[in-house]
Image 1 (cartoon, rainbow, N blue to C red):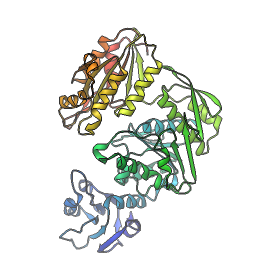
Image 2: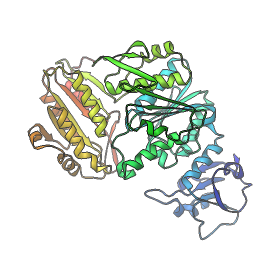
Image 3: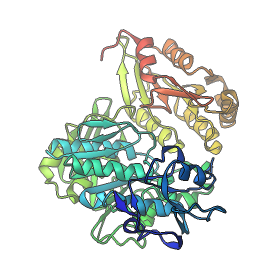
Image 4: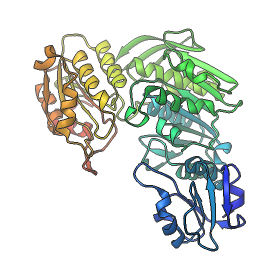
Length: 488
């Protein structure tokens, strides 16, 4: 329980009606979750406006309301607080309500188009191997050391996030590694959070359905670095042209870079790259990892550099890092008894798909075919659909266009959008099968010994979202059924 006056001090208050000397037992922005002695924050969403539910929240027992516009009818005994931005205020209020949990952790945020999940999950695993109690906040799952916590968004809302961080502190966690999405930054979900460090992986075409322009997307990512304190570290990929942009006006005293090609603070060189893993020359040491591909060499560099910046010792970090397994759904592969290799990857952006297919191209012998199964999500950025198909055709011998998560869109219409990126010379090698399971089975049926199948777009997801309903679906399970017996 907190006094309202003690959790409002950074909320940029414009007007108060009523007393702030009232006890608050919970903070909610969903009126359905409001109970006695709650503070309700009216947030304008993309679907609903919390201001429409202020009276409902008060009827449920809210003793205080934070809003951008005062309601016409004020209930006696309830405190109403007007602020300039309810989303921003929610971040500061939640941080104060849960006693500033991020200040008690070494919290590292990872942002970028691709690699966030892999880097966050690897850092979590690495620090566990180093004997630390650690938290993880990622697309795949959240963890309070060894205890899994369901993940519904890449980055939780600010109330849920601060609650989770407080639980980590109470469980004895000293570190937490967290994916920070552009949506979360733009929507102030991490406002009020204090990061010990921030990592930038890369930036490419994604989420323009939300941000509208690429410059707005860049600006959203940059917010993570703009809000770092002088005591934090900032680590960026110097081989990405937007890496140095992230450091502009950044107050972090430690500003470091990593790269495979550029002259950076942390560098690596690929010695070997095959399906069994990577051999790297990293920080003057030869290093082997079970992760595959050039894009994972960047992820390993980011993880290694972050660990060193957090005080890790080189030999300890490299030893533990060599024991880390690939993240589920990120270049996860199986091989059949007939020597067909099938790869499942979350690649759902043009850049990610290009990286995975180029990695396969670097590994293949050219005596086999690459068969790619790929779709695009519904109700999301439509402009990337033709490019996804074009890239699949460019780097594959056979392509099957299919459904991803069509959501509320017609999957055939999504596939037609993708077809616009297929060049005339590639028509003959391209098929379309709306049913994703059937598309995967077809890829398996046409594969010959030695061939490589890539199933892209869903990765770790164990569902397919169709017309608002999530139905059980697992790319890897379909592959295993189709390719058995497997030599796993």
